Length: 377
Image 1 (tube, one colour):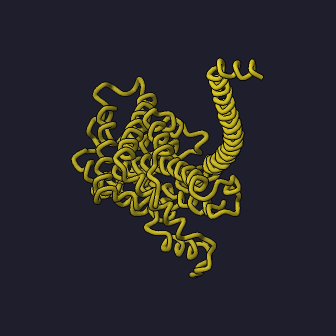
Image 2: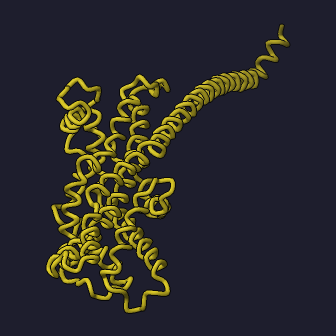
């Protein structure tokens, strides 16, 4: 007993230190074990969230690709076909050429004044037709592509705002397939409701630019290029800032719905299946995009590129027969008129649309639009 007490007296401090070390080590181990379990649980939670996020992203990509497919295979081709028929109908020059041919075959059929008026009319309408075709084709393509990006952005917002469940992408949600189709259908608004005013203003622009250009004047390819650009620039500035957006986008969803009902049935029916509130939001965002300086810059670059291609095509046609000084304007008019046809070809066969789509500035604009478009309230 004495030896044990003596041992305790001599080694008591060491025992306490050892127990303290052991106790601290145990506490540290428990803390580490708890931390490790929490990390493991967190990793499992994050893995689960990552899998859900991947599923959401996969479904989002699928829906976006569906929208793109509808646009590429249905919306744009149909809208281009409709646009082509409207422009060729409204700017049919056959009555002018027929009268001129009659006058050519019968010396007394037309007076000199009548011939001059017919040629002047043909001059203005030939440039009106090619400028209207060029502008409408370019803007229709850019508009439809903006629609696709706006819809893609809304798909993302439906997920991020509403719920953590990927079921938000179900077709029964507020952003339904029907709602998307209503918005995509506005691509026909230009051809159905905007084209007449567009042509009238384009004709006024052409008359202003061409008034000093005589039919016998020699026209080089440089002059032709400058003339078309001047007509387009004059047209874009005829009204107030961005007034031309009204050719592409309905003024409001309610008025657009009424127009669609009247067009389809011939009478008003307010029960038409259209989410007016959602459509108005989408159209408002579209107007905002189209009125931006970046879009205006994209339009200018695209229009200039298409003019470059058109003039190149005419140059190829006139190769070997066109002197450096140019050819009389009257001889250019038939070629100018005919070039409106390839401008309005089916998108899959339209080299002008393919060229616009491949412009780096166009690609950059839509990439930024999809990524950074302001979030609506």
